[in-house]
Length: 399
Ligand code: PLP
Image (cartoon, rainbow, N blue to C red; front, top):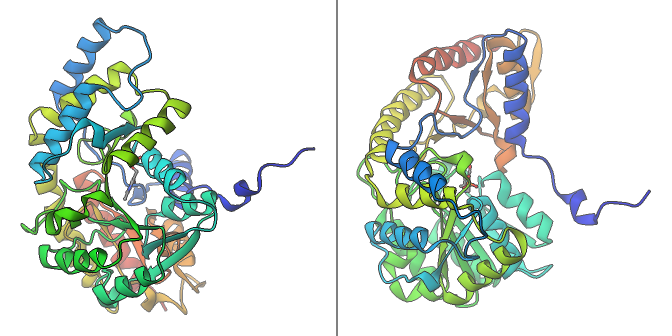
């Protein structure tokens, strides 16, 4: 029998999906499961988004669309960039894709040849590793442990960029840690980036509207506008607008990169569907109260999650300031046991927690940080307190 390509041996199914599927199976068996596993928003976009989709359906041409993206989407995205203080982008700087995941994969294909250096911090969003493996990049991990609040320091970045990776991928706010870089921290990192002209910078900032405590969203381009010829900003409607299933990703960057994305689209997907484009344009250009209200809700939930986790003796949860994730250091449990089962590592802990208490979390090793555990707190609000109480009970029962 013929073999699959070697690159498929390097690609793994998402660890997050594996946990979510186990949780779903237990639920189907009648178990009372609270899922803190998958990072999906628990809300829908505003009515104006559905109205635009219905209207588009009425007048659907049924034709292929523009490879780069519909003009209405590109213009609405440029308006969104303006709201973020990222001015001066034109349609020629932008492109759409089937979610940010697709954009990131296309960027990896467009910017990296096999063996090229690809640098990113740990903990990382799981797909970074898989995309890097599939394209055969030389992966350079920059460890950001809980002791440094999971944040990259300028010295670390300087040392990494001195090795001249072709691409440095930066994620702010972070999935899985929820960490957000302050204006000063971004400025210090941007100074480092400016000293290393041989590296493309991708900023995966899809949670840019989910920032708490008035910290604000900051990009290297805010700090140093001249970096615009190397910084590629990636965005998505999935999380902030409650539209993960609509599959809309966006990028803004140098014209050459946006054109490469357009060429990739012309060969992979041709275009986004007309109805999806109409909904995307409406989300980006219409009232912004859904993301604003959800952000306030997530900040309140964040407070509840962090307080409950830090109340567990030995567990340390740096305070996330964005997205909807918390990433406590749970290594205090390693070497102990629960109900006779030894907890040697994060995977044992997640399995035991799911079995014993019906709470699903994702092991930190899925994100390159085995001392941690990711809690996604998008579950319905009434489930949050009982879920956290079960985690507390679990730790109290460790022997
Ligand atoms: N980047 C980050 C940091 C994410 O957390 C996710 C989704 O979880 C994505 C990209 C992919 O988003 P999309 O749904 O637009 O493909």
